[in-house]
Length: 603
Image 1 (tube, rainbow, N blue to C red):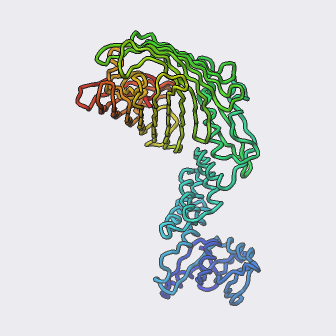
Image 2: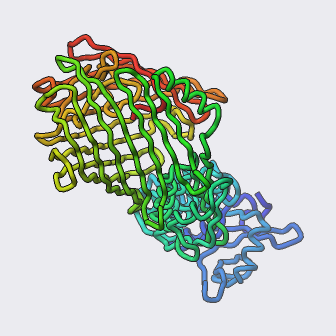
Image 3: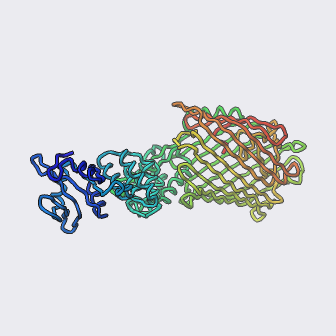
């Protein structure tokens, strides 16, 4: 405490308490001083008068127009005006010593909201972050619907580089009062915390940021124009979140990049550059990955080859050959982005197969045909597809649900992502096919399917192939027409490649279809709880608990079927490969169980 000269010197607080008054000495600041004086509660402050002399005055008001502070000065008289600069210089010399005096001990009461905010701000400026946080938290508790303390606390967290906490604080303040500053700081906090899309969403509400230039990195074999024509963003415009998502989806649809990262790089306030960082797939891909996939496929008597980015034009070629005696097939495909200037990606597929069935008797189907489709990104999370499918088919027996002849019809598809957040994703996809005599079909029937898929991280994602903890679920609703033939019906079951997983029931017996019911109408629910159990430098190991449930109506076996399976599985991830092993057991009372293995997640 400075040695004051005047009323009782440095013993002024003691002098006041001795006369039944409450006196509190502390280090003040201008904001705190204004708060008290504005409420008619004068404060005593110390001045440094030079040569080691200190003097006390009573602050009673501020005159902002004249930039003066009004004080009662025992040495000069009452209501003396002092220049603000002179006042603060003298006060700073005395260490901002301040004394609050009340008539009795009950008078001060608890500090007001404004006082708590002022204390928090002052403590933060002094670097006393714990004290500042305590004061601001008390202010929030005192007036939860006021935003000032929330903004100040979030700012404190921002300075401490606690960006997640800062973002939560600024967001909570905006709930109670719109504020461009709080929204700007919310966007900055989200960006620094790695939530780029959430940051863009907040910046866009302010009409920001302006995009200055786009740089594409990582292209070695792919022509720059192949990637650049997929950009839905233009320099000198606002970096819009919708266009940002549309650009990423367009690049994903090419299928030639194993990694796509879009990074806004802030420059001057309100301006960014965009860095598009790509990792190419080229040729047949990584040798180790090819060897691993080939070994797994060889066990299944299968060869799968893909050649990516032919000639740097983004063209992908595929070959799938299976020599299994009961299910041989040969399939080839070409994917060509924007051929001949078309605003869509072309996919052409040709197929020849001879699957076997056992439905009270063994028989085979010989089929060949092709698919042609055009696929286009039509929105930030939406892809539309239109195409034509044709099959020439011959069965080895005569059955009402297995007529020979040609199937020819149009097909439509729509994929849409309704929710795309860091921890939660929700997708919907719809497929529809209609065989028509006007398109050369011997049969006429509709076939439709809607799939809902949810994926949620139960712990913060870290970008690794196997999440620390996650929940995934999918529901499929499939419907066929009265004349839908056997080879177009829904076939749930367990196998190395499962379009409709039912992991306690093998889809085939000794490689022959008919192990589970085959039906025209399908309701299918798949749920997985995924947990990482080991995380090493070059691999991750995970465990899965799952439920698969299916209901089929109008089955080839007759009547309807309801099946429920539960099970456990293991996942091993290394170098962009994920191997799975699952064991499922039927809960439907039929005693079925199945072991399956393969590449990638089931759904």
